[in-house]
Image (cartoon, rainbow, N blue to C red):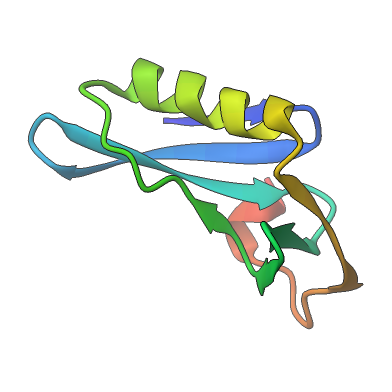
Length: 83
């Protein structure tokens, strides 16, 4: 399940049956700064029981202000961000 929210792309991933996590990436190609670290994307480390719950958790992370833009863009665009 892929969705966009406030300039971020949220991808819900079923890591095993009934266990969902999310990947959060910036739509504009900039790296994400996560709680003092620099990362290409943020992974929510809490399992959810459904894709919808995982996406809701990702939106809470985005709204909390824990994600911000790092100073540089990725060297090459990630193909799934171009859609």
